[in-house]
Image (cartoon, rainbow over all chains, first blue to last red; front, side):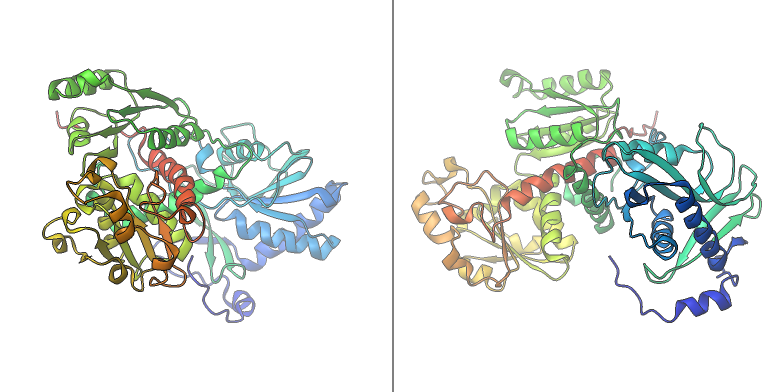
Length: 207
Length: 309
């Protein structure tokens, strides 16, 4: 893996320039900047504490790529609000997808790193954007290969609608109504572990 | 990469090799789980077509396919049909009519996997053809070196043994060169191909010079039938001159690793205590072979050849 670039007080930069989208050649509308994402994850941390009795059994599992920094931040927030230090895992869903048919090249795999089995744990799956529900379905199947969780709850930073499966999100950062062809993306900048995040919407037709 | 087949390292770019290796590093994690199975190739059929017997490679492909939930069928043609080229093509056409999603082929004659690929719509994976290529062995060797050294670029790799008749050597030479390593070969003169330098390697007649400063020392399996006098006077002489032991290994780098594609002739290519103990990584090679073959099957199985009609 590439070595991390030097960290240059990115927290300050995030606050002063977070809405100042880096041009990527595509008009993209920022719907959540780093500060807004931080607030949403703090609220979700409170909701997690409110809704669960056995906080010691919490196990956060981020779905790459976007879910990984979000799970890490949520874990830090849980430390802040309830003095918890939950396990944090990474679970790639690519090998559980339902759409790998046909001629095209296969999608590249991403890291899976589960620090322990999920037996009897309350697992909180963390994803960046939920739409059809197929990623959550795949993630639940993947999770079952690591044991039998006591319960599974789902965090999505953005719920953009267009569900194709009966999947419910337990903790939503922000509901963002979109058209079917729009793209909603979590962008990450900066060193892993200290990245600046924002969610952008690229509307169909502007691409 | 040329199309959907894996026929040889010759066809792969550095980027292709890196895709296989990176995918394999993710597959290694599956091998460490309690439930060593993912559903990605559910409903797919992989045919192992081994004209030449090979328990190890066939088993490695079989486990790899099963860990991806594919149905793996072993097809072992009878020895009597091996010699006629028509029957190989007939076999290929018969197979094609059964709609496999990938066909893994080993054959004693160079070029047969390519010939069969021309008849099949499914991807063909070469599991060794004559003295030509054995690409999954080279890829798993690259993966093992990458795992140990965290790079391949700039390493010095010495391959020892019957370079002239070895598909493992041929594939590894191309693989390591493409990934930026310096490759040296060493062996008795009868086992070094003429004009071997044109492959981009340095040839040595002396083991000591060949492994001087090497990061990786790879011994090839010596076919015992080649030791009966035609290529080297005797097994004992080969072992004394080109067999690796800890004393000879001290000329290599302090952290050099020892590799061998297996099965090891203990006391010939490698001293007894080098066959499966550090710095030998022979068993890591076997373990990585499964992950690497999972990567190859994941990336290729189920794809189909585009045919100009």
